[in-house]
Length: 249
Image (cartoon, rainbow, N blue to C red; front, side):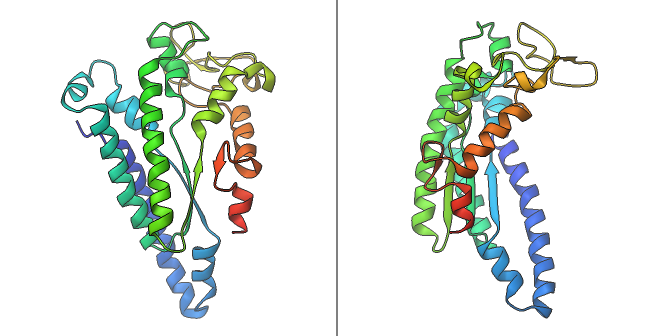
């Protein structure tokens, strides 16, 4: 099993897009020698959130992943993820990217999919996925500090997705939601968390009242709250600066 497939494929696609953009900027530079390059280096923000699918669709995949978990410890799996990510972020830096916003892995043990397949109550979460997420997140924080120190002129900002989403899940009523357990769009089990959202899926009557849109992803209403924290929030959720500060940095 290729344990890093989802992380690597996603980033490779992004690199192709960036290289294409940089190629176009070089054509622009023929006419405007400095402005295009300065804009890319000083103004662009590269937002990357990876890792959840590497756990959910690989290491934690029911039945199919049992062999992988026997052959590779959680420490080794997280090491592989961090080492690949370090190489890819360094590659982005070498392509003149300078401002990075990196999201950590959310509380994947609390999503409707995990609650449904593990037959939990609405206020419960699965321990193993959350422990893996926290283990990865701790290593990711160290990685970004390392890159900030070792890549001159770079700024790596950590978006604390785990704590932001967990806050919505635990205190959903405070934010105007009626449930943080049941998917708005999905099928199967107590929390509509087995079959992903599709044309034949059951649909909730008011998507703005659900923290989760489908078995895996936050709803638009939840994402609006998360975005506001990233743009103007404090260091609990985004550090060492928020997006507005990074824009002017």
